[in-house]
Every structure is written in structure tokens, then in C-alpha cells.
Length: 144
Image 1 (cartoon, helix red, strand yellow):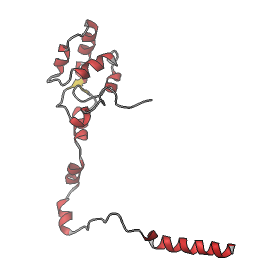
Image 2: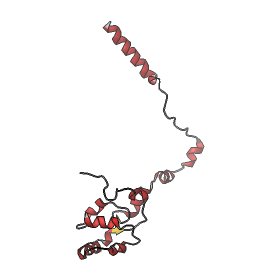
Image 3: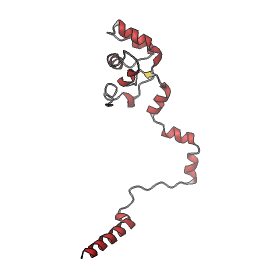
Image 4: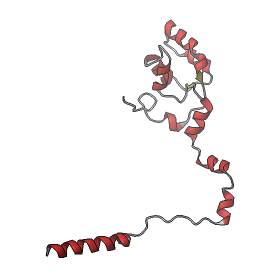
């Protein structure tokens, strides 16, 4: 009886694996035709289609801090900016120019000196909703 049960399970497993457990394919790939290949004629077209706004924004600013889109952790690179001064900058964004950051009300002389020393490390681009929505600028959820 034990040998029969082992044989029965083995055969049923073999048949179910062979026929894919009887389940249909959940998605069917589109056929590659000559016209669809002509639409994607080079890698630049594909790259333009696959590029998202966040990648575009990161490509614009490079290694500088974007005052309108960066989160509070980006300010850790510069001494005296994290967390208090970074929070004030983020709270008062958006800015039209980098120099507008010096017009934040309530800044002490020390904070103004720190901002003046780091103006070359900042850039201002238009706010990107994907980067500023919610509370991710103050708390990006990165815990070490």
C-alpha cells in the first residue's frame, strides 16, 4: 500500500508539472512585428520612454542639494545644516533663486553664515510632486 501511494503521488506530481498544474498563463506577451520594431528604432527612443521625472531631476542637479526637492538627510553632508537648519529650509520652500534661502525669517546670524558658506552647494529647480508630496522631505523613512 505504501509503495502504491508513493507511486500515485509521483505520477500525479509528474503529470501536474508537465501540464503546468492546469493553470492558464496570466499574461501573454505582445508579438514583435516589423512595425513595432520600427517604432523602437534605437536605444535613445527606449531610454526616453523609460525615463521618469525623478531621474530627470537627479540628472539636472548632480551632486548639489536642490532646495525645493531634497529631503532633510541630504543636508547631512554640510556641517551645521542638519537637522535644524535643514528643517527650516524645507519648511520655507519653494525658492525662486538660491539667494532666497537667506531671506528666511527667524534665522540667527550663525545660521546665515552657514548658509552663505554653502550657497555654492545649492541649486533651485521647480518642485517635483514625486519628491515633495507627503512628509518624505522631513522624514524619508531611512533608519540606520
